[in-house]
Length: 368
Image 1 (cartoon, rainbow, N blue to C red):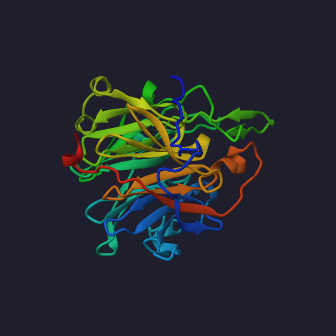
Image 2 (image 1 turned 120 degrees about the horizontal axis):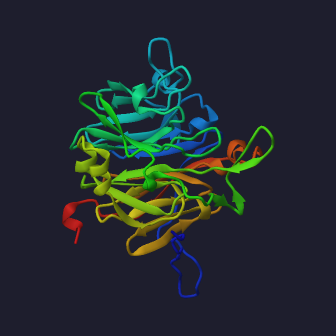
Image 3 (image 1 turned 90 degrees about the horizontal axis):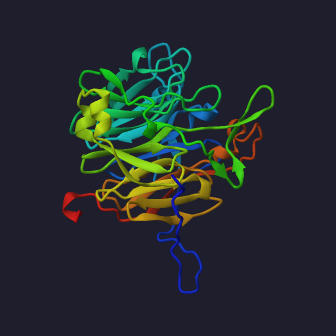
């Protein structure tokens, strides 16, 4: 599929202008924010990109922009002999019951796990370890959504082999009551990467091999979101240009793969992106990494909401607040890291948490 056309809002003189103004919420001098999540009371938490091996995996953002380890230095820190701590976190979500779920990527000595923290009572809620039988050697379980109604979490396992390609991407379905997990839709065409690489500022996102060869990354399933009505799970390949969706009822059910795939449907075109969120109308708020922009994709087309080559250099994760008023965005210049930039570090700190006013519809009564 061809890339979706990019359009801009223009004033009467033809100059590009943002539909909403970007606001800087917090600045990170050294650490790179991964994904944001917004609590019901408006507080914002961010994961810290595991690619840089940060001291703390998650931080809470104060009203003055300062940030501290969340929920504390022990759980946000590296794994400890007593079981506390996390090797690295990208995916983070807060549910309506005040449970903050953090997806620990794991490492060579620690299995990936979901850590649920009861924010209201400031205590551990639950730890769910992902069993080896739902993982692949190349597993990169890095983002997820919470299905509160069906008591499920759906994890996007992008998988990334040593050659920089997503080889067996799949959706891991976790039962929050039993802790049991299933690996679904592995290597389905809708989850697989595009043949075209991701390019930012004219440069291909590439891995430099031991022999010096530059190999373009080929990213599969990465962005995943669930509409606020709890009906659909939307997903796409990071280096792909399409969004598909599947009924949450079907994904939560223990259906066979053929029956599950038959209920999947194409939704709309999108740019190459690292993350997206969705409103009650099915509008996709997407991180347009190639254009340093935040865009809006839907069956009606694609348009850019905000573009900033400096502040939105590699927009990573996004999340709408519970009222749909604000879209929170992390921007972290991942494409300038040596591991993604052919061995060359072109980073230019600081990195940012931003937001933009979107007034997204979040309730059924607003749907036409």
